[in-house]
Length: 239
Image 1 (cartoon, rainbow, N blue to C red):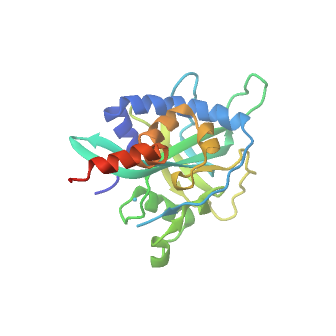
Image 2 (cartoon, rainbow, N blue to C red):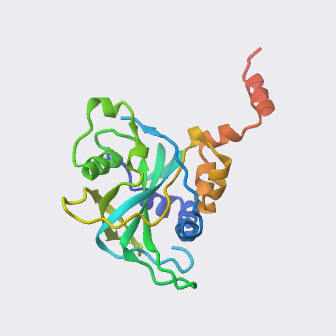
Image 3 (cartoon, rainbow, N blue to C red):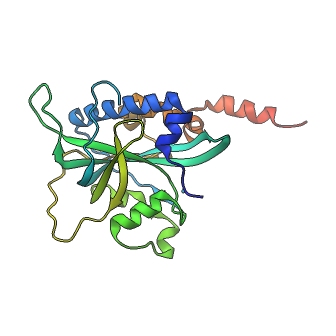
């Protein structure tokens, strides 16, 4: 079974989360324009519009990965079936597609993101897009643990397509054609991983995505009070 479309799941079955995502996209765009911090961390994957926001234009675009966000394990219901999947959000800038000037007269590139199940299963969207991006299949060794940080700052081609509900989304990812010029990177690279948790980095994530991360058991485990955890363990002892 292929990965369910995360956008469709959030729109149809997770309205609250979808509203948060719309808020996040607009909020994150502003965040990128004002935050010059750069965070370097590591992560391995194994064989898994709000306000005045303007969607990126449809078509084929040069892009560069500028952010990776670990969403943890998310539980969604689709067609009456509960889906439990570890998810990651990949974000790109489109350096050849600039937004209208802001209030200060500065132009910035469009920002787009795509939700993935964090898996390199043969039918996973993440594996399909990564292999198309780098232009070769994963080796058996790489399938045992591929560091997603390897794509941060790397260019690719993105196909931006229309969403049935309006706006646009990332349709497909592919390699940069040989000889094509790629503009310099505009935004700073950023990453957030729950297994290398940083409160400072988490606090910089827009509220909409924070709410999604906070629902994950990985985040709740990090925030659980040690005394409360011991109390819960005692309750499980039968005698």
